[in-house]
Length: 173
Image 1 (cartoon, rainbow, N blue to C red):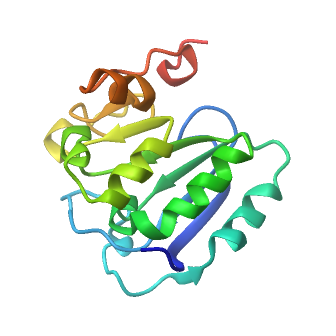
Image 2: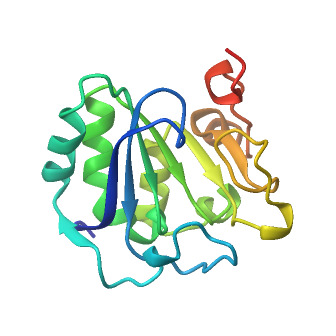
Image 3: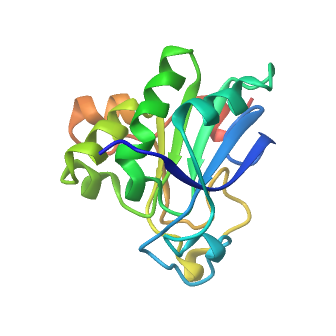
């Protein structure tokens, strides 16, 4: 189901939500409520502001140095239908798309049609809930050791989670 995206905020020049200069779209609403979450204000499904895919795309295009976009939250897959048109626009324009989710890759494979479609548009998935007991400041682009940085194309082709191995995502340039 397509419609407006409920957005909690936009970071136009993030360097912490993936490699390079990225635009990060923080969506509003999350069912996971992970203890220790860095964005608990995004949990309620009310709040934030409604934006169309075109409005978000215009925001992304304003930074000529940006080549990657990250969906974060909140929980992006809770708004999969609304994010799908934006994801398709981003991919058509050549942006790398990373998505943070509290779901696992395996759960998303069994998710709704919209969730599976959004997963297919992503290049990289950082999956799994944030676990405070496994929190680490030494991990690249993730908050707890249980979370995985996955290559979505290879994972879908293999039918199982395949780690991202590019030096950009591993932090070994």
